[in-house]
Length: 220
Length: 420
Image 1 (cartoon, rainbow over the protein chains, first blue to last red):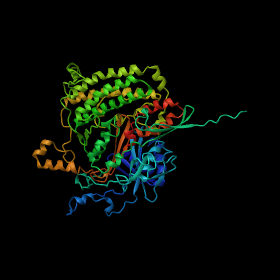
Image 2: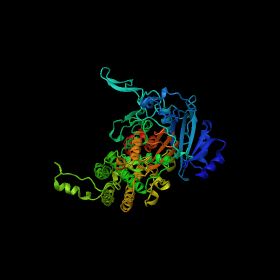
Image 3: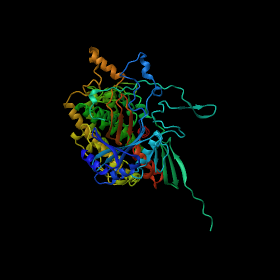
Image 4: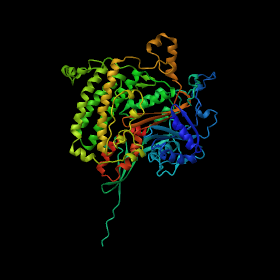
């Protein structure tokens, strides 16, 4: 894995922004404009030989590192402090907010690599790698459906997992877990109708971030 | 010359409520006569946003959701998830827990392949195999029940080990209106010993049972006519399409994570990786049946090891694994640990990890991003069936309508994991 890391640094150093080896996994950060070039080299160079695209997924970093329940300071307001929704909090949204993550696998060399492309919320598009690995087709459709990331050059960018006529991108962090609409059968109109949700969002187990000295190693 | 009659392609729905759609698949087929020109699978009818739900819950609460992904290979899903957590935490379960996990993974593989064989044969028209396979599944599900209390959704694997050690007793049948004392005595004959004795007894009989399925199918003329040279995919194309597991091995690529990137104790066990030659439905059938035999072989090795080596099945770190009930009643510290674990859970260090296992269907991967909290920041499940179904269009182009069913079931699709 370290050999791969040095080889990558030799050959791709001008194309990648950052590379990191943690937990035995190699992560490269690539700018959106260089993605296709890097992918082609990783696939076709016999020293890398990443012929199999394992996975493509989107990540929304909006609430990264923000807890629902402060552990450093105490308040007098009791449990209420733990159920304050994110919308009430003051925080600076992360920029770039989104990322697409690619996991590659080489069968001959028996090694894996991860690519990450950070994307700004204002320019939420990246080149499709469908022409390099056909298996990206559905994975990119999924990322488009759930996060609203558009892939340039994708042959068939439709929604895949959500309902026909669905509005919004449900895996974004600012999309409520309970959704926005609920469906029911209306006996008068003889069809299924959508209405705004009638339940309120609740936090059952607050998200807590604890500084743990045991993990102050080079994990991340 | 007379005007030619106008010929146009015909588009129709297959599913979402079709018995051979293996769940809820809406497949839009465009046909020219009886030949498929294009297939457009519409998925997501079983989408439950498992990954989003996981983001709102402490880590251990999500183990149960993993069972419900691929609901015919429950413990393997848990395994992938638990491995990702352990990778980030940097802990390793005790060796006995690793053997137990491998044993149940292989039993799960047998469960999955038996259900696949049953459904595949039924789709193509062989009824008997279905009944035979369910006979064996029954005993394997009894093992699930004995160890976890649940026949399907076990929630048995935990970060740091497994929930509890293997039981010394098997549950027994009781006489009822339908079964008299004599029947029941016969049914309980192999249930007098421990769970391991029961599993051992099963593995003694299982190879003969596999022979029975093979007698019915392998040289069967109708079976071969329906599967040989149907849905062929070349090795290069299979890799490009992201196929893994038996789908890839059916095309002749000897790729198995248990051997190539061993996890738990697979490197200490002896087993072969069966591969196909032609990459058609028939070879995928042969690969899976051969895997049944290999799984049986692995289970036997695990049973032998587990009989000889008692020991702990959970790590002794109460920041991750709750203390025992007895400790909790006596020690204040244990009580606090228990309370914190059951309410807030444990925090993972900041970072990201990808853990993959050789799931019965292919590579099942879990990509976990943690920001140091007690809940996953992002959990991405790389389901094996997802790229397989994406390849369906390519596999069935140019085949007849009747072959759609054969090819679809040879992919081994379960919608719990495709839709997530």
